Image (cartoon, rainbow, N blue to C red; front, side, top):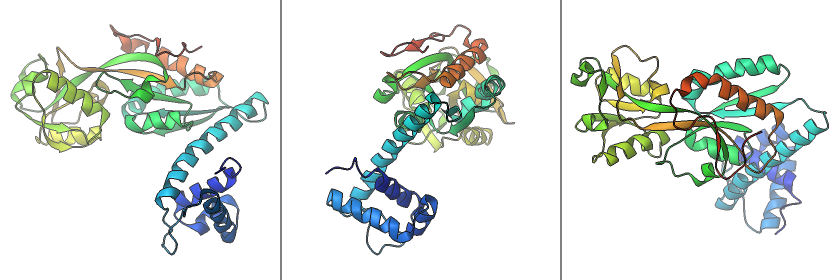
Length: 321
């Protein structure tokens, strides 16, 4: 089985998977519909397995087809990245930066760094991807992104994240959201999550990175949070708390700009996440990625305070720059 010589056909299969249509895939690639069918048929001969369910409308990929499309997208992203770097080396293509970030970073400090980036490099082709933490690392590892804002905590045992080069920016302590009139709202700060052990909680969806940190803190305190509702949208968390449906412990960035009907309180002993900017290890850093990293460090210097980590490169990979 030699797929290496059929990259274009793999691109066609990925287009079919994305558009769920042979005709739409043909239009996006500048091919005829019969040309798309021929590419798929060629791949099926190479792999010796059917890749598309015959007669299905819209066309559905078989298990083999879905697996090939999934791996094919990663390979194509890597090749596109290589083309971009080679184009930049030859000065034939404008500089490009693809930055991924989780939502609360975008809403707080990332925008300030992007303004400064535009001032320093106005010709840069910039793409910003908004995604949740659990999907950013795979997108960075596949070559779809050049940099990603990520966060770390011992409860998040992500081996793929540990293989990345990270520059820590600051620590983000979690804070408590309480409905107005809640008995605990009378104090300036709660001692720990134990003070909320008997409450109904607003939690995250299964696999949610931020709520795994909360669950870890609660379990260390000897209890399991009793979740009434779950969501990964922090504004929805705030809305549920404001409606009196439960309490929540969320990252500090997510507690900013609280909705009416919410009281925000600190925890004396608070879990925290370390926010970092990450890139692939063992690869030369692009100048525009280095500039973005430096600007993020400079933009967040006031947030560090007594940060436990500071802005330093970690993991087995070498320090950026």
